[in-house]
Length: 450
Image (cartoon, helix red, strand yellow):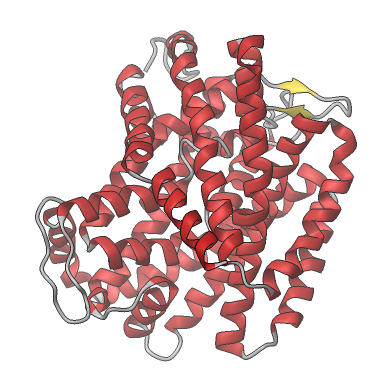
């Protein structure tokens, strides 16, 4: 068993190694340049469109706002708390700078994914809108590329059970047991019942819960972080300077921190940034394909806000709390480092913010990824698989909460990374379509293209 774990670790390190990270970041850079920074120039307008589209009556199953909240439900998770802390632990404060870079260029990747998802979406036998990488590969690239769509769907269906289900349930059970001493089986039962009551209702119910829960959880967590940041406001310029300079210069060992070079900052910043915002993995466009809109570009702009909110807002809040409180030198790692940071900034109850964030973020990730996995399974086996998939998904939650998941985590991590390969190939080949649709788009408030 140890030999197998070692092999899987090596495969995971290769999958998420320099080649994959360069491929992911390079695709975002290429799309940003090809779009002439369209995503950056239209960020404010995208927020305006999101507000206007709260009650859209266009063709689709859920509103544009619900589509973004569903995508954020799956995206904002343990990576925003534990993942950011791990990046700083391994790469130093400079890793935060490279997380920002993945978000800025990842916005173009997420935009392109959603544009293609809307352009090539279909209606299934139940009349529901379905889309995502498997559909824009099949419909955009033609029959000879259909095998690539099957590969993506296979990786996505398998990865969803690990990274989107059992690992999340395990994180919740562990956090609750540590802070409240509640037995894991009780937590497992609560999560299973709560998630099951939502998931069995399909995308409509998931979206209805997501549009209420996601803004609440994000505002609560960001509000707590802002409190700590405000209390340490005089240190902000110094913290920003440390983040930027250590992204380009090695940082020496200090306290419990073992030191990190520029490559470590870049590698772990990019890796954790992509792991958090999922730009390029092909997951988010599955949710956006169900949006009520007739404009792929309009929904693409809303989709790119997911990367902006996830990394440039939520992850930045966690990072600043860790750096401003100085605990990044402590030698702690993961959720323990984030908990220490909040407890240092808000003694007595700051750690509860982290626990609340972990529990709610992980729960919503279970909801969002259930839809991603279901759509991948439907592509492979048809609508007959939907109900069995939901039942199996719900049954997997207690196994995740109560089990030892080292091997499950490694397998899911590998499959999650491999999802990106067919998706990035499709984005590259279909990029002329994205560029053309963007050129043809006219903002309602302006005559020329912006």
